[in-house]
Image (cartoon, rainbow, N blue to C red; front, top):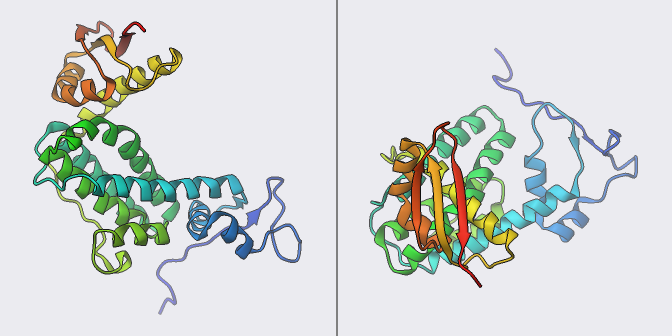
Amino acid sequence: MLPWRRVAISGWVVTPDRQKLSKRSGRSDPPDELIDRYGADAVRYWAASARPGVDTVFDETKMRVGRRLATKLLNASWFVLGLGPGDKPTEPLDLALLAELDAVVADATAALDACDYAEALERIERFFWFWCDDYIELVKDRAYEGDSSAGATLRIALSTVQRLLAPFLPFAAEEAWSWWQDGSIHVAPWPTVTSSDGDRSLLAPVTIVLAAIRRAKSEARRSMRWPVAELVVTCTEVQEAALVATERDLRSAGTVQVLRYTRSMDGELAIKATLAPA
């Protein structure tokens, strides 16, 4: 009988010049010092970013990223829980977000089943930053107004994101979970695919246009709430349909006064944002 059915092989932890780290070599910091400096979640995040079977460079910059991720999880949780809970997702952008979240759950679960925890973390983290930086900003005004669809979607996503990140940021996830749920997050059920009927393809065009608006304001040294007098989007018919479906949130997040569409002849998406005069 085989002693194991699956074996995960880890590489060495090495310095940037590929020298092995060990207590004997004197090149490594004691774990307690790293935990005191960055926090246990940040050190665990760095360790979980190491791909099985390959050597991993000791990188304190990665621990700073992990600390930032843990802090963002706490801040995002606090923000969402300060809004109304909502009832049921109905808006196109909200349903698209949940469809994307379904894909993240499926991908992360498959990666963990294959013992590729680094791949799972990368997929979860990529979605988490999109959720914080783009989706929440797009629906923030709607959520402040008490929109039921936005409130429901934010809480569904929060519950899922907290549980997805719990294996990697156990302390931050446990703390944020305790703010609104009973029991430990570490005995809560792992997220499952909900089979949302949303269209994930709606997300790409609206996030590209939002990024272009932000870039125009940054280059002009204006605040992100500075009005856009006119936004002209050159796009395909499919892209226009996606943007029309999410236009309410895009106009709100970008403070867009006039939005016009023109047809793209080469299939490329182009955005021209004219800011309101000072």
